[in-house]
Image: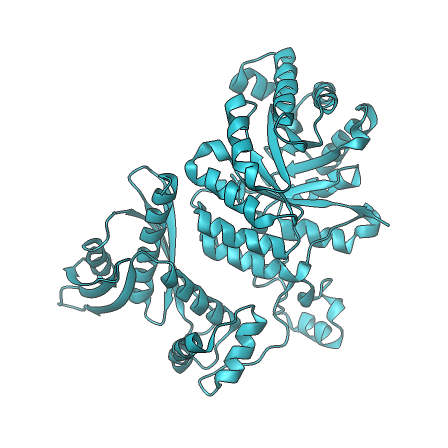
Length: 511
C-alpha cells in the first residue's frame, strides 16, 4: 500500500491573498462545502487575528467541517495571534494552530532582525504556547527554500522536541529547483530525530513556474502533506495547484509511493466555483481544469483521439469532472431535459422555483442555437447572486447613439424590497447605467478594471462582465454579471461588486 498524502487546502487563506480575490465569510463557506465534498484532509480557513471577518470564517468553517476535516487557523509566532486563533477554533472538532516564523538569512536579517539563537527560542516558544490550546500544532519555517540547511535542521529539531505534530517546509519564494528542494526534505528526514513521528508538509510557490514539481519532489523524498490551492491561487504567481498535484499523484502513485483521498471528479466543479467567486479567470490552457485541457484542434490529434482516446489524452476527462457526453439543450427542450441536465451539474430546485428558472432558460435559448453547461452555470450563479443581494437590478433601459446623449433608466430594489426608479446620463451607456446605480446604493466604489468575455463559444454567446471596484479603504472587490445584453451585464456586475463591498464591510464590523 502506498503512503497517504494529506491534501492541505489553503485557498481560503493564502489563495485569498491574490490581489482582487478577497472573499467574505458566506463565500468562504460555499467553497469550504465544496472542499469537504472533495474529501480535502485539511482546510486552512483563515488568519483569525487579521480581521473580524477572518475570525468569523474560521469559526463557521470549524463548525461546518465537524469530523470530516482538520480546520486550521494561521498565526505569527506571537502570543496574541495564537490566543485569537485558539478562540476562533473552539467550534472545530479537529482544530490545528499553524504558527511559525522566517528562517532564511534574508528574513532573519531584514524582516525579523533577530539572531539564529533568537529564532530558535521563538520557534520553541510559539509551539509550546500553542500546545496549551490544541494537541495538533503545525510549525512553518517561512522561506525555508533559501535557509541554510544546517540551521533549518536545527530549527525543525527544536520544534519537533517542543511537540509540533506537523512541520511545514515552504519554498515561500518559489526559488529552488525541484531536485534541490527534494534533497532539502531528505536532509530533514535523515538528520532530525523523531521526525518520523510527525507529518512533513511542503508549501511551494510558483514564481518560476515549478510549484507542482517542487511539491512532488518533496513527496518523493518523504513529505506526506502538500499545501495547495484551487486553480493555483496565491500571492504573486500563486501556489501549488491542488488539481495538478492530486492528478500527478494519481497518475504516478507507484513511482511516488503515494496516494490521496481526493474525489477527483469534483476538481473541475471546484475550479469553476472558485473562479466565479473570486473573479480570477482560469487560463484556457491551464492543466487539468482549463477549457482547452481536453480540446483538440489539430487534424492529426483529432484522428488519433477518435481511434483511441489515450493517443493524446493521458487523463480521462470524466476523472476530473470535465464534460463528456451531454444533452444538447435548445429552445425546443422541455422541463424534463433542463431539470435532468441541471441535476447532473449538481443543481436541484423545488417545483415552485423551477418554472422561473425554466423561463430564464428559454430567454437564453431564444438567443442561441445551443445552450451549453457554462450558460446554465452562469444562469444559476446569477440567480444565486440575486438571492443574497442587498441591491438587485430589476430593469435597465438605455438609449444612446449619435447624436443622442447616452441615458440609462434603472429600476433597483433595496434589501427592504423598496423599488427605486432612477435616470442618469453619461459619456456612454455603461457610464450612464453606473451613475444611475450610484443614485440608489449606499456606498461608492471607484472602477479599477472592466473586462468582457463570452460565457461560451459562438456569436450568440451570453456576455459576462467582470469589474473590480476600489472602496475608500483601498480594498478591491470583484463583481460579475451575465446577460444577453452587455450593458445589462455591466450593470449587474457593478451592483454585484457593490453588494460584496457592503457585505464584507458589515462582516468586518461584526454585524
